[in-house]
Length: 153
Image (tube, rainbow, N blue to C red; front, side, top):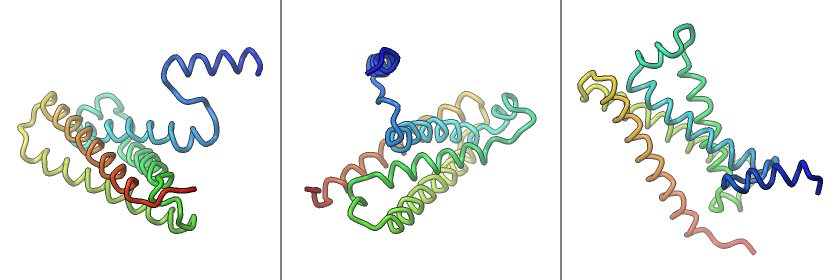
């Protein structure tokens, strides 16, 4: 291993990150980036005026939604409970899960936004808090489904 490779491994290792491989980029870093986009999407839906102040010339909603869909779709695609299926089925099921989760979240945030007083800090906190709660619930659910799947040999 070259010293540059060792330096990269040790830096990523020290930060608790996985090494930069194609597989890790697809099934670790893309889902992590999806979580970040999902969190930003929660703020965007709950508090559109705040995001417009940060990005006044561009609506970033579709970019955040796309990144969320890619991250959550890749996360689901790589789960053990789908591993025995054909690639086409895995793609369909993981896409369906990603779209259902993401658009369901947008609907929940729209409902919450209609119930919460129009306060920038409160709306942002409700969006981030509910988003993190939904990520935690979804992750626990998927892990439970994975635990029911037959183990690969």
